[in-house]
Image (cartoon, rainbow, N blue to C red):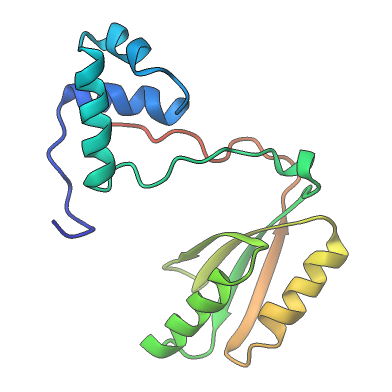
Length: 160
């Protein structure tokens, strides 16, 4: 199975995933009772979902404001050159920047869209100088400062 293949999932898998993505601390017994499987069956299915790459990580979701990162910026980046090597180099640079929480290679007006979190605008300015302005392949970038975080990192809408 390649990383783009969709594995065969049944209704029980989706019902487990629906609960698991909302709270990975939920006991297997609670899931089992809710969906009509045994605890062992839920545990086996969760193990399989990890092994086949459906569950990729189990992490804590943090409130950025409460840990000193109240500034969120959405940044559209336009590159001069888009050869495979140039794109890979930019991807690697963004992966190495702790301020970049999300990075998307996109169609449309921009080549990349970034979600950047910092403690203040001065820190954001330092990030742009280091990561964008010093990159000779960045033609331009635009910044939108987030006024309110309405929804972020929510559960995926699973097929029924």
